[in-house]
Length: 359
Image (tube, rainbow, N blue to C red; front, side, top):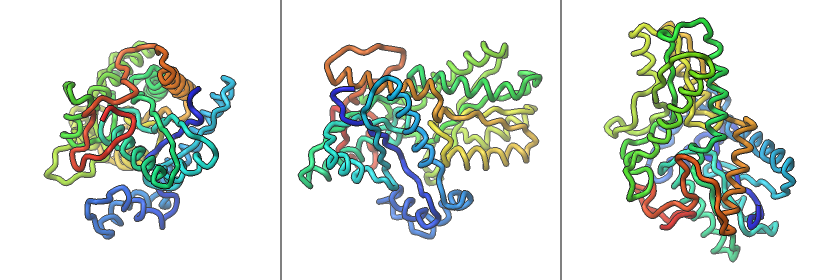
């Protein structure tokens, strides 16, 4: 893992108690002028789960799995953890790392795709935290692995979860089964500008469609089916007048019921683990919609700590280390560069410095 002193798991964060919900949402929506009364309403899905998001426990489990994989390879590099919007906060984690003598880190985010919110915003927060430490006289360098949705381990883990879910529908004819690949909706403009500035855009959606196609083919081959998968979205949070990616999973469920489908498999390929968007938007809200419509609803698991996924994350770190040493790394279809190109996935609201890129 040389030249890296530690691996930084960088995540979105989430509240762990009811009193943390509104402060968490204030940080997430900072600069948008949203009053606390509205945040209380937005936070209702957290309160349904006791005010505790699942994401932090899932990060702890992923850290333990990474530690086990690293140990199996004889790698002693520590794994540390920082969040963008809740404790442990990123700047505090980097400060503690510096005090422990760690100077060069490699970041693994819990977001797999290319877009502003799933990549560049993490890079902006890294830049801000590194600058904060520099102002204190602490110098820390952080690199980042590339978006890993196209990596073989992410596909393998999702394929295994999808096949498991589909097996529960053995005996249900293909024409009655709908296969939905679900991801987090984003503003249409964010999707249009995702990817390198000199590219064709829409990389966020294109990465999802490529994975959905590969998973459909793999599941059909494994089970002898001929299902056709489609991409749908959840977790829209913008104003009604702003275009976001569609269709919403609940709207599509209503259409499928009207078309005569009897069962739906929802594969949440946009998410690394079963955190709040999965627990509420799919397991609670979409499942309730399906019940109302008389649809059987089966939700595939996310990669979580799947061994193939964890091993591939460690491979990604090892490859990033090799790049840092000036060595060649293996290529594969869809592979993204570790250093983002200038103009990649821009911040359309308020441009800020971003780490791990050319700009």
